[in-house]
Image (cartoon, rainbow, N blue to C red; front, side, top):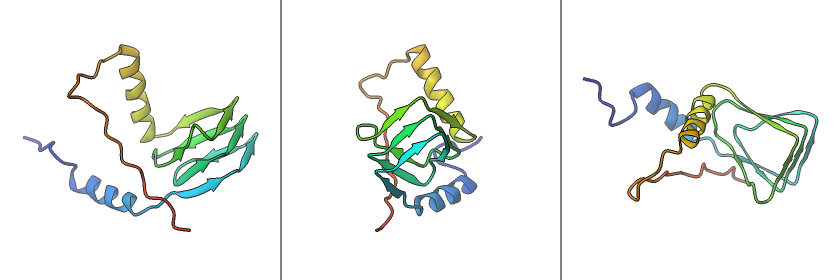
Length: 113
């Protein structure tokens, strides 16, 4: 029987390495008509117009309350695409979360200035 109570050793090593990567803060930038690679960055007070926002890992953050995204697309590559597809499927099927269910998140470490 497979132990699914924790990640396998390869995934654990990958997660340890990813945990060491701090997000670089990108503050107040304007992006227009370009590809923007999101992974490894935290976007604050940025504007995206007609951009392609690309993520492979899902290891990024856009502070939605402070940024403007207009006429842009998100391209989620593998493995981030599997998380996005699952999220959309859960939303589409309207799978309710019971009171004991919750989604836990952990903020990634920020880049030291």
